[in-house]
Image 1 (cartoon, rainbow, N blue to C red):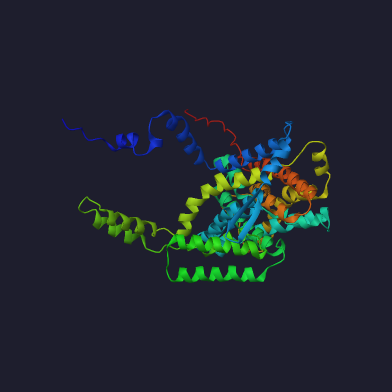
Image 2: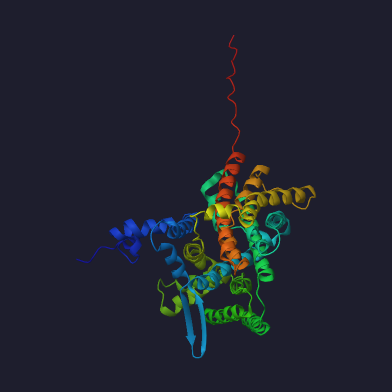
Length: 462
């Protein structure tokens, strides 16, 4: 007797997707992990977990752990190709190499926002752009006022940064208490903040330039632009070019991660084909209820090219950036000793105090002040369903500098481990305090006044 036809649900349970099966490992491990990764704040949780692990690794009273942390992350790793060799510590490979993926995703996000998002409309983008400028300028000024000039003053760019992952994660925890317009305001502000951080890194935190290598990098970017104009869509070609650009930028003295930003900004944000093309082909191919290999290959191409490559890459690489790159970066950079008076010394240093004042006070003050001026001058308007308390709360959440602040701290004090550690302590404590202050202010500002219960009317039935 032939087998009875199985329903789609039966096929789904029995295969081919293993995670949908009822096997114990899939049911109790794979599916919960998959569901966790779809939570909006999952990336922030992993980032926080990696930070805690790094701090415990360095500070737990276990013999050899603290030195083991430094030994592990400063292990030299070299790459040889013939007579050519490049050697960096593991930490540098993370900061200069792995973080390029993060900045590439940032470049993709900026490009998409410029073409399709809020940065496309000057009126909508005006307020978060102006707010971001205020949120960068005031923290930098506060830091300089406290830390002064000299070697310590080199870290003025540290409190300018906003960590998108943590900031958006905090708003995600608050849920529907925060209006969507306020979330959009923070996201746009953080993207503009990233643009500012990229400019600061490129202009002010760049070592001596090797103009020859920089010229090679620019030339390769021009080749990439020509290939794009010629409608060459072979992704492997761009991967090879991208690696070459990254190496040229690394050798030029400009921080290598900026190669990721440049390539991200050059990625097309407009689809090659209109969706109707794929729809028409699919309709014709499925008329006989059968697909051959050639038709399937063609349909995949048409469907893929109906979505902009920038959007596709962002969708694929965002989980890698959030769940791998940033946690590994935190693990490699957040390990700072807090014992033996180190915490007290850091808190009394002008560097840590300047960072704390910049992130916790300067960010909300600069953002609120810039918004007030822009709205009073009629240049911009308040986001819908948003009040001033929520603007201040969003400004406080924007004071979670963390990832980019740690990144700039490493560039600010390359020759002083003590100042770097002071900066890291200031960043960690200020980011936590900014998150707490932001959550409290947002909760208070988002409380809906209770409507006083009115006594029921007495109906005269006489």
